[in-house]
Length: 353
Image 1 (cartoon, rainbow, N blue to C red):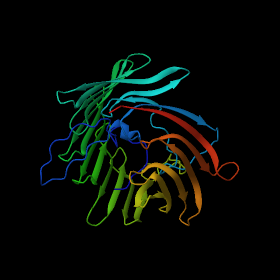
Image 2: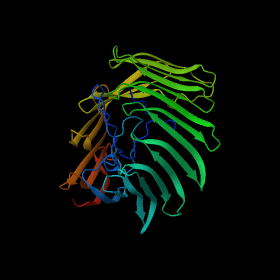
Image 3: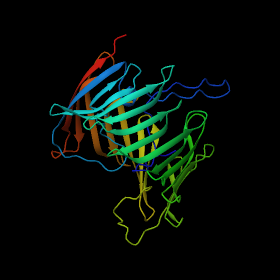
Image 4: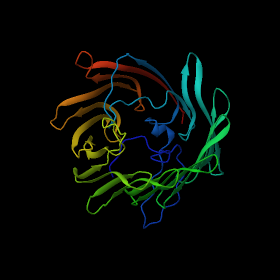
């Protein structure tokens, strides 16, 4: 299923924080894939105990259009992890003071993480509480100034794929509700998202046999705002209703989407209200191609193959395969060619066997 880049509701595309133990698989069903550990989610390898990062930006002003990212920022500047790879400290040090969160974990008799309490390091207040099931979070409580702000609940199918995510406010009023159906291997068949008044906001579906995909958004009255169909790299149809106060230059949710075209390529589609659609391509090369870790270059080209934007990475790597120093250059710059955008240094401590 295509990825539609946008700022979605809280319930969409949430990454797993913990790696709980899996239920024993039955022989006639695929083995559920274990959620990644915090260490893996932060792009690290091995038994990482702590990481501290120094970031130096050149001051170069550089940006790219909406779509696949070319810049990969440090996901966690100053973090600590327990021996199982679960994050216990998350934040950064500035002017000698730590700003971030301290995470207290609760485990059952087998050692599996069953809950966490995330506390603000500066105030000591609880920011978030999570209940962890076999496949990931089942409840998440978010607090603001010591009071409940919102609550999310999650359920999973028998293969460990999230199939329902509900977000409500402190009074129990629905903020967002997402339901997802997936194949046993994790490929998504359809997604539907409802808003505050339980009105359908948008839905997307994919037919694995024909390859046909559909995407539709709705207004508060249930009328179609935007819709497209897509198959085998071709936009079959695109419709967008223009509102009376809508800025035609402002991109609307659903006007763009990304297709994984394989071999490190991502095709970026952008459509406009007149029905015209354009395709560009972003190509990634990696230091570790098998795991798609540590890009060495990310280049964005138009349909004619002309280079529009690029980001280029140089690394120094330790014996565990984690980078300890990197330089990022971008194209174009004020001088027209590549220019230094950022330089990072990282100190990594490991748990001893």
